[in-house]
Amino acid sequence: MTPSVPIPTIIDTNTFPAKPVQMDGVKGATIREVITARDGAPNFAMRVFEVEAGGHTPLHSHNYEHEVYILAGQGELHTAEGPKTFKAGDAILVPANAEHQFRTLGDEPMKFICLIPIEQNCAR
Amino acid sequence: MTPSVPIPTIIDTNTFPAKPVQMDGVKGATIREVITARDGAPNFAMRVFEVEAGGHTPLHSHNYEHEVYILAGQGELHTAEGPKTFKAGDAILVPANAEHQFRTLGDEPMKFICLIPIEQNCAR
Image (cartoon, rainbow over the protein chains, first blue to last red):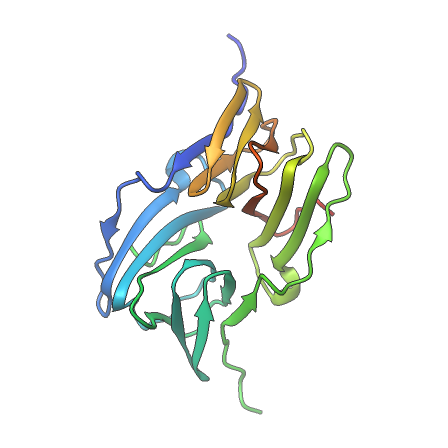
């Protein structure tokens, strides 16, 4: 038997099926779980979120971090210190136990990547 | 003493200083280490790479994974199975020990996010 050689996987996130985020306190958000344990990812998972204009993720906190990159749009991040604005091209570290909510600003939808430790998933 | 409350950090990656990637086999690539252990990230680190037209990252492999999101441009990923093309909006899982090299295609620069386990950094 030939030992298998690990090969990179390329995922077209734009054709990947998006699912509505079903959590209390969410409005107009979808998720694509593009890299997860299912793909053999050992440590962290990548999700792509889209939030329609006027929409938001839940206001919550949990015992693990988010690492986020804003792909499109702009918004307001709810924090325990009050709101902070963000825009496309910003990276955001949400530490464990930090209260957070992503809200759109303006008339455009917002799109972002959000990575989490592999064993966690607050959006499932 | 009041216990400190964790607060999210927003990083403007476009004004974050880029450094040339200095590795054997690299051509025309810069790195921005936008979220690392320095920021208190516990599990994984986020870097933003830019590769000029005609440039590439090193052809190599290592014992940890990459999770990549292509922000702009298009390219060819060298794998042990041969080249695979990718474009903006694609996510890529490079498993541990998989040979890989990101090469630009066409006349445009390429920009991508690459996440790694926090204790690793092949570009330093």
